[in-house]
Length: 336
Image 1 (cartoon, rainbow, N blue to C red):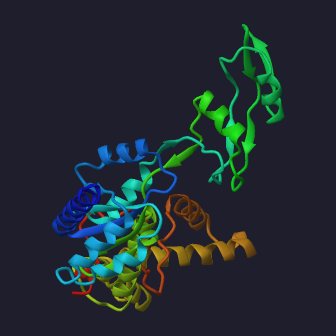
Image 2 (cartoon, helix red, strand yellow):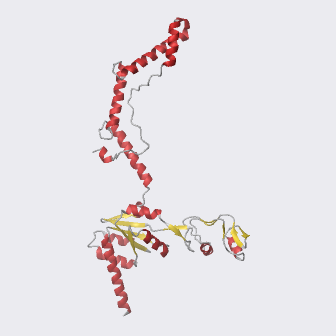
């Protein structure tokens, strides 16, 4: 009777797994090694609107996958990743968004005796609330500097009691729990995600969105420079191409002495500057060579005349913008 009851229970678990796996387009596999049940429950609560976490024995998870391989193409690939303590994470949400959320929302976790420390374990200065006694020697054996205040032991300096990569010993683990210090962070992390028949490695799901934004901005700026310099007309590049063409035409008119409404002031300014240079050179050689009237005029004009605009022969290339463009400047519109 006992065996039959267990068998029926397993059948029901597999049936539930099949229903769950069939109900979501994205199936993730997450590791739950060294994660307290309280952490899993907290993550379930945090992600209840985004995902469903389903746990079962590995053998039952593999049976459910085997049952679905004819219905869902490629799902049998998941079996190779069901190793150790793991769980299904089922979602309708973009897996990249969900992986980033999980990475950014880890929760404090206690240290367990025997586990490898993912970071230095530091006990800060604090009142331990522990009365004096033999425990003082134990604290000092861990390198902690202490003193007695108000009938209680106080740690007076921060101290590293376990370095990154070292195993947490039992004494340290017990002390940290007694001091209510959770030195690590725990959370769920994708091993893989399965979507539309494809396996996506978990490490590639967590994105640095600021770096991604910078890469897109750099791509936009490079594409804009290419379009402007190759005279490839788009909605975004047209104004810069026209600006460069106008500057080139103005330079050509000024250097050729071709009079237009825009080139005339620059040509006259250059002529005045030229005459001032000649007058200045003459005055430096022989100040008497200029009449008093010319000298006065030279001084007056020299003080009042602004410097002529420097006209470049070569049109400017568009500068790379530091800020994001104000309009929707998608790359697709740039080349299509």
